[in-house]
Image 1 (tube, one colour):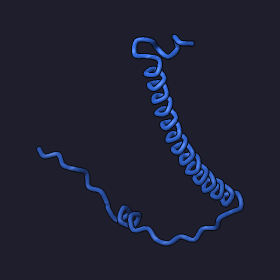
Image 2 (cartoon, one colour):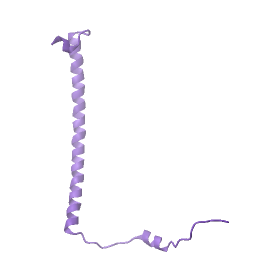
Image 3 (cartoon, one colour):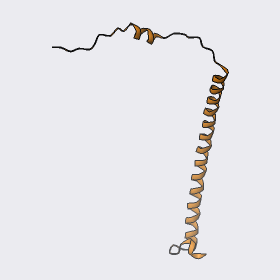
Image 4 (cartoon, rainbow, N blue to C red):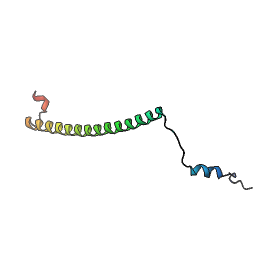
Length: 86
């Protein structure tokens, strides 16, 4: 005996898939939520840019610190660490 898929009326599915234009009215509270959502999105972009620039500055500071540490170690001598001279 063959058991197949159940027979489904696809007419409602097709009508739902087609959609169409629907009038709607944006109330004051909904407009406020929409504006706050847009403002939070812009704020998130600004914070992201600040963090990216801050990360770039942190990398530069780290590179300069390592270079300074190497230079001070070489000035004192290879066998003596830079902190031992203090």
